[in-house]
Amino acid sequence: MSGLTREQRDELDARIRAIDWTEQACAYGSEQRMRVAAWAVQSGLIEDQVQRIFPNPGQAARMVEWLQPRLMEKITGMEIVSNRST
Image (cartoon, rainbow, N blue to C red; front, side, top):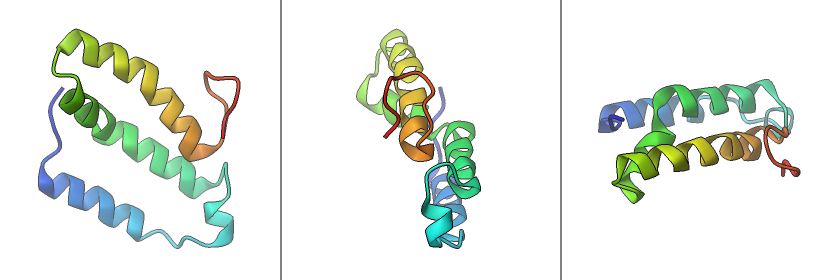
């Protein structure tokens, strides 16, 4: 797991800020929310933050496995692994 550089984090933040956050865009299941969820996974942001909290690689990997789909549920409002999506 490699951490995001400050420039990469700034780029991700800028991409999210650039979205026109209309009422429709903010709605669960919107294309914009799906895009943000994909960016969070693709960027390594989740792994980076978990690794900061759990420096043991095995523990961090288990936490990422558990946490990542649940964070995606919170962002998208769509059930992935839990019984409740919001």
